Length: 265
Image (spheres, rainbow, N blue to C red):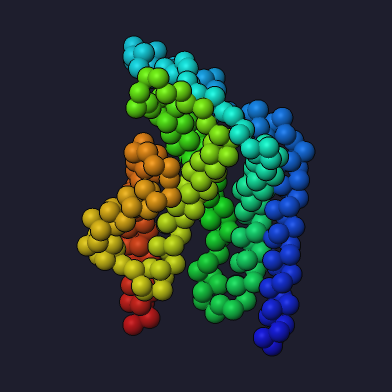
């Protein structure tokens, strides 16, 4: 294929990917009651699944500290176009989340023919594992990080006379940032897998720079999350765990490569 043929092929992959996002975004836009009352505003209500689970856990261990009965804040729209703008933005974000497996598959279809046969065999199941890790990250961000961050920020006060009245733009942006960040950060094992296959990363290297990696993870968590310690720790903790898993994955890849080289020799 010529360069222009590649551009034409890429254009159709992008068109199909964008179309899938728009389809899910339109469905989300038309399902306003479900999207907003249940999904987006869910973490702002005391009857949210995470809060109820924590309350049941508190009852089991006889601790009332885990039970969240009230979230002392209200959500307001201080701009005339605030609610309409957030309705469109939230629909696009949900469209992106739902269409992610398909958009990645379209991207992979464009990249895959440029790989050697050996590289194509090594990358089998890439779409499944990338989509699975992304879904796990999104669920972790929505059910764990977001409600605990919302609870922390809602109850944090520098003075008792200050009332928490959050703008709808700030609320939606915070939730979208936390969920998308977790979804992307959970791709770490996949990245390490391919880097190990390419010989750019080894388990010894990852062990040697483990402390440096933890510092980088904390810095990324501070940059990508709202400015509160709870959100940063909640995102940093699973990333450190994924880093440890990535060391195991890298070791497994290197062992297989060594075994194959010994068989050939």
